[in-house]
Image (tube, rainbow, N blue to C red; front, side):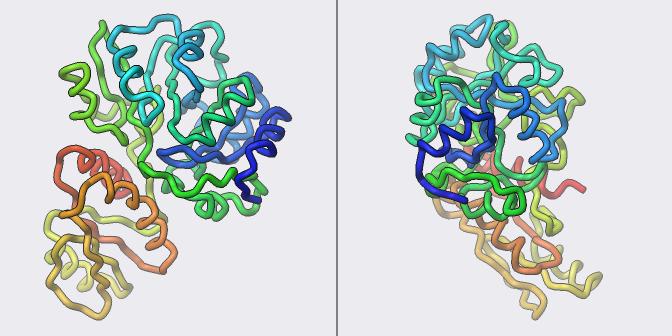
Length: 319
């Protein structure tokens, strides 16, 4: 079932159920952070590793301050500038944060979503919501109620329908080491956006075994269809049709090699990157339903949100 009725969603959450909710980034599977059984339902529905922490969603900066043990000045600056919005701050947790939210970490990711329905729901409930993306673990994040319904149609998950997500990419996660800002997950706020407020930031782009933030697993955000990410789409496509018998979609700004088993789709490099980003997951999801045997994709310019989208495509292409 999906409906725009916030009262139904509130009653379900208060009763210990999981509800899919809209945010400006992607749809999330939400539950009361203080209800361990409800949080367990999220992990079970998503088939998510228990060591992968959940982001806590609040409706105010004041509420965030009760959930953390320390709030660095730069974190406060970013929150004042970007909240509500697609910014998650990773901070030392207070005793109020249950251990089942953060996996094995002593830090908690918190954000204040911009979507009016999500904010109203959190305020009406009176408790923060854990809300990881409403998709099976490692799959494409949903940016519409229809995508959520596709993923969980057999589990009868209630979906609060707030229309399509405007940003279409997950929140940017920023942590702090000795007051220095470190981006642990690229997202809908670019590095340039952050640096315009607090100056230089580091980006932790190296793989590690400590997944104390979401989105750090090498294989993530992936369609079922295999993805090849390449700067040479013509050469890659020629080689692919020589070695395979199926059909492939080629997503590239320019593509000149014609073949009956290749389906070129213009990858809109010339458009504003935020517009392209808002449709990235929807495009991959729709292509995934069309029976292609491979998606051959040219990366975006490595700047702004192009850097975020390339991160998602690289993880999608990981075998």
